[in-house]
Each structure stands twice: as structure tokens, then as C-alpha cells.
Image (cartoon, rainbow, N blue to C red; front, side, top):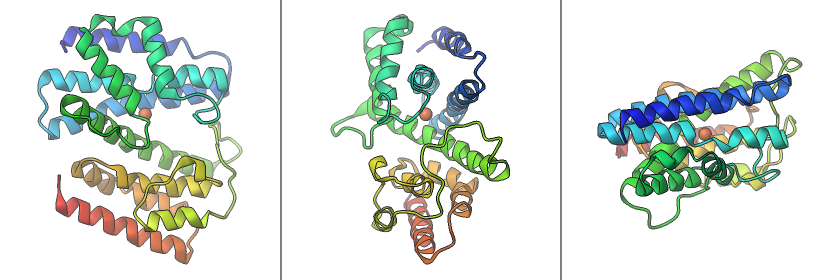
Length: 264
Ligand SMILES: [Fe+2]
């Protein structure tokens, strides 16, 4: 990818997203969340790309993927007032529809356009499809890690804002904020498994599920960043201090340490 193409994508994104802001404060707050998330994911992506030594062209491609990966989120929220895919629409597929409708990827050669579409389609899957290889696999892994790094930032900030001012909180809360959590979610985490979103019943389950994302991190440099920024400790601060949660904490930290020691 050329610098000129990257510049066009950046300008297009600014324009496209600007069109979703209006008079509804709830919508604006949620659009801003994904607007900023997309921009910060670019930053995370570039840092990972540099650490892994990507070429200048790959680096630009990686940035465009980060910028456009959640492009379906804007239309999703305005239409359905939720970011919950099962309750509305698959935001990755909606993103592809937006990209095709607006023809923004037409400045790319067929092969590169298909690559971009595939990586965007795969970013929200529970697991990457088997048999991916080459650039598609590398970029898919990178995007999923960059996305997670920023989501850890978003959710920890979100929990803090909600704790400080629950009345003034303008973002969507998808699950009931009850004191409990589901034991099968705890058991799954202790078994080293990620949590299926359909299992989640309470907001604490959601926090546990977010801890489980670490099992899906692709590069040890990503885990190092998660550790450096203290995201996991922060999430535990917002969970009840029970014996179950203490066990989860030990398991998660042990996993992170051994994965970093193994490298890769
Ligand atoms: Fe994302």
C-alpha cells in the first residue's frame, strides 16, 4: 500500500464518521467511543508492527485495517442503539457492507482489497478460521491484538467512570450490574478457556470474559503491554473479592507470566 492511499483512507474515515454525530447525546457518546477506539487501535497496531519489523507497505496496510476494522459499528449503533451483535447485527459483516456500498476500497488492487475484507471479517470471530496463512494470518493476529489492547483501555476507563458517577454515565451497559457472577464462567477461566458471550448473565461475567481474552492474545509483546499498563489488576479491582475471584486472579497472572517467558 502507498502513502497516498493511506492518506485517502484517513480522510475518508474522518468524513464518514463525522456524519454520525448529531443532537442525540447518547448516540454521540457512543459514536465517539468507537471513533476514538479506531484511532487508538491504529496507534497500538503501529507499535506492534514496529516491534515485529513489518515493511513500510505492510505497516500502512496494518494501519488501514485498524482504522476500518470497526467501520460497521457506527451504522450499527445509530440503527439499533446497541453494540451487542447477537441483539442487533454482526458488526464485521455490516462493516464489509459499508465498505462495499461506499466503494472506499476500490482504490486498492483486487488482491489487497480482498485481504483487507477478510481480515476485517475475521476480527470479531471467537477464533480465527483454520488454514489461514501468510499476510492474512499475520495481519489478522495483529489486528486482534491491537484491538484487544485498546479494548482493555476502554473498559477499564469505562468501569472507573461508572464507579465515579453512575448517574452521569452516558454509555451503554449491556448486562445487569448485580453483585454476583456465574460459576460456569469462573470454571471456564480456571480451565484456561475463553468465555462464549452467550454465557454472560451479569456485568461481572462480562469483566471475567474480558480477563479471558488474554488466552487469545497472539504475540507475547502484546501480553507485555497488557501487563505494563496494569489492565488486568484494574479489572480485578472492579470484581468482588471472593475466593473464586482470587483463584481466577492467580490463574490469569500465572498464564501471563508463563506466556511472556515462552515468548513468541
Ligand atoms: Fe475494535
